[in-house]
Amino acid sequence: MEIVSPAGNREKLHYAYLFGADAAYIGIKNFSLRAKADNFNFEDHEIIKKTKPPGKKLYCACNIYFHDNDLRHLEENLEKIAAYPFDAFIISDLGALSVIKRYFPGKPLHLSTQANCINSEAAKMYRDMGFSRLILGREVNLKEIEEIRTKAGIGVEVFVHGAMCLAYSGRCFLSAYMANRSANKGDCAHACRWKYRVLEEEERTGEYFPIYEGDDYTVILSSKDLCMIDHLGELRNAGVTAIKIEGRMKSVYYVAIATRAYRKVLDSLEGMEIPGLADYKTELFKVSQREFSTGFFFDKADIETSTQTSYYRPYEFLGFIGKQVEPGLYELVVKYQIRAEDTIEYVGYDILFLQDSSFVLLDEEKKRVEKADHGKIYFIRTEAAIKEGYLIRRQKS
Image (cartoon, rainbow, N blue to C red):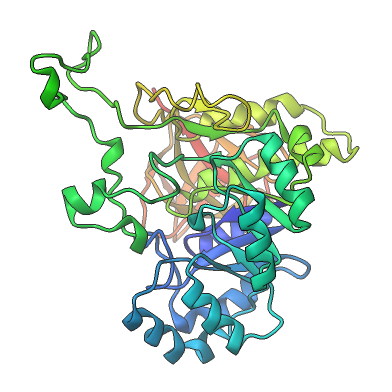
């Protein structure tokens, strides 16, 4: 199975590939859901060409629902989009499908999960329209996946990790109603995640949704996160072509850790010896997450119960290790303040992590400092066996 990871900007794209993704998906501004992600401009194609490694794939999420003005804008910019090294387009709107097919004949087309394909008859229809892969609606179970794959004879991709939507893959009006931000245009305000103090139905006057002891709000509308790390074998047996990680708006730390965990488990399924495999899976609990569930794959009862917690963030992401300047001395890319007295951890694409409390921070003149802040030039001296590209984190106190 192919691992498809999210990339909301160039940094995330680089780390998705570095930490084990076979493919990554990005959005072009104005044509992609997740409008609040950094996304990419039409001028970024040269940067993307340099970032994409040989043998890896890149998919363009062109998956908003288009009004006529949007389609005209799409047609006006097709030549610029063609400059990108895209291996396939992810589409939900059939009008956009028509435009993309005319301009990019023969280019693979993937149906977005936003189209909510959840049965074999719809799968056959989309296959006949020219799609080569279906990113199925998240509401299908394992048996249905196998049936769709068999009857339609088409590649299927499923989400295995990340946030789940309250509605059918974005078809929710809460955001538009409460914040004038349309989910179908990629601008969801995530109103379902907000904390509500009172919830009363008109016909049940005085009967309120319970507020749990110790809290003064409820998260009745917020679904649990999806995590299928322990069930990749079942997905493979069901005929899944690719597994997808949600999160173009999430941090580069999340992208790297989630991608690495699924890479290790998938490699293990393919017969590779992975020392400490269970530890790589445990790492998923060290990134921001809500309660985990297995979504609709086995029993929808779990996902139909809303989470009672907000995001859990046990670690702080601090930055990256840059180029080696001399033995034991590296450039330091700081994202969040690092203090000399900290105990930090280096997280690698080829190691679980290394702990370090004896490092030395240096400024751009290579003078020792007690802290390093975002936006300035720093170096780090350490005896730890680290490499360029390792992440740096700190456990929250």
